[in-house]
Length: 553
Image 1 (cartoon, rainbow, N blue to C red):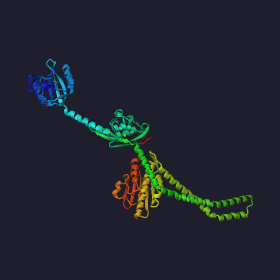
Image 2: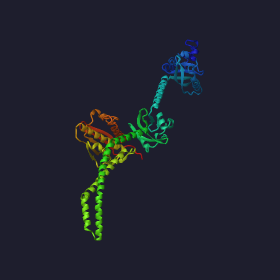
Image 3: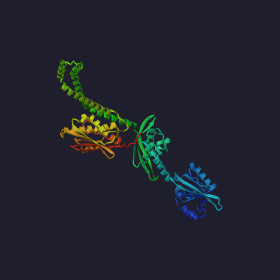
């Protein structure tokens, strides 16, 4: 119970000591205003007693004006707010200076109500301050809304802090406005260290050579901007971030803020590289028997030719030795008929005419075989190399030729392979090893499709055609086969990881998934296919003529 309840109850003698008519001049105007507003209006005399209370007190604090007149004007104020209220009244009585205060007051029902109170001095005709007018407005709804807003904000903040992804907020100039716990954990900087600082100079040791330009691209994006493999250093180790920048419009401010979502992708990059290398070695392993056969064939005829040369050498050496002796005798002027007859006999017995024809041919054939072996080994070496993370300008036609050589044993027994390469192609920026792997996967798939068509009796021997051409800002590669085709029901799943139409143990379902990832994600290119049942499939690959990714110089 408030002190006002203890001082007087309704109907007590004390409650009628000061009638409501004790009002200042122009009381009719004053009453017309105060009795028709929801705000609480009170008049306090210099002894801090209630001199007037508007009818709205009955609703605001549960007491009628008659119950309050003559009582301590601050009897309903919460004890913790009383000092502020007393000081406000003293300030007005002393120099007429009023100010706004927030007070908690007791309602008759025992609940606390919040009021926004503002006082003003009331002066007599001589100009002296004789009382204080206080207007109080209930702000419980506002307080409740603010509490709900704070609660919602705290809940949202807790939610954002618990998200396992990096979340960073930027203002339109690129200053950091939000920094969640994951960002602190990953990047090693607390929110207090970075808030208000520019993202490029916030304490992260960026290794990206043109981060300023990259941030400018973020702040200019109107949709979504992806930044992959942003290098930075932490604890002496080079690491990488993958970030997505999304603009967030704030119509009330008329400005656009930005939300950065991302993660440290260092381990993922390492695993992806390992997966690509494993898939590459798996393909080489599958080709091993065929490659061994391809090497064995030229090796055999090189060996046969070498043995032929060895076996022929004794006869050739005897003819040469006899001819040399004849030359020496002729030089002395004493060449004998016996020596001439011996030379003729050796030439006839060694079949010299045959050797003169076959030895050069054997040597030429051996050199061709060695060149073929060297080409196959070089192709294998190129494919088994882990490759580089930097793009290099390459001759696309030559790279495809190398792949055709490595995969020769896969296609030569089932298809005739024809190439139609454009001669005017410029050098194309590529990740060489990964591009070769894509070509290998597509050629092997084409070979298997043709082999399946042969098994089904659709053809006796198929065809694979590989073409290259320039198409606007792209170079386009097409690999067409005369295989069985792809049924429409599964065409939408062709590039899914681990999806394969081959029998168990025949395919891992990684070849086309890796091809899609390499062409689209690593080269910012395009890959698609067209297929007709019973007639074959054509895969198309497009690579940009210029590297669209940021330069790392």
